[in-house]
Length: 90
Image (cartoon, rainbow, N blue to C red; front, side, top):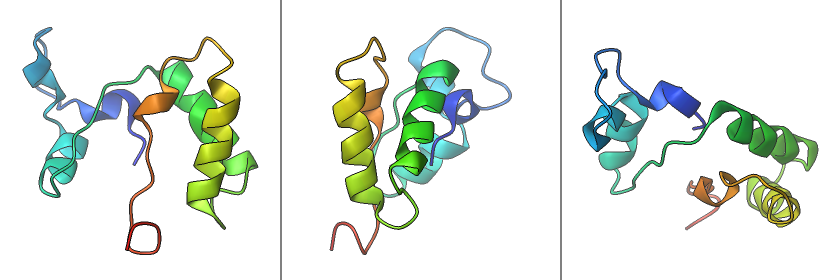
């Protein structure tokens, strides 16, 4: 799930870490995961490269390839993306 600022709930107006308790965080928390806020530009770059690398057919390899490219750029959001699912992490 790439939600950018969609991870925030509608009533989040403070600058405290608690503002990141929106839908995405609740969804991930129920599964023992966490979510990190990423900026829209960084997330767009990660997801665009992910799909160009074949993210639909092979999500784990596509994300790894996208992240390998992004490590050489100024994008600081790439480490916050991971692939989860029964076919990826049995």
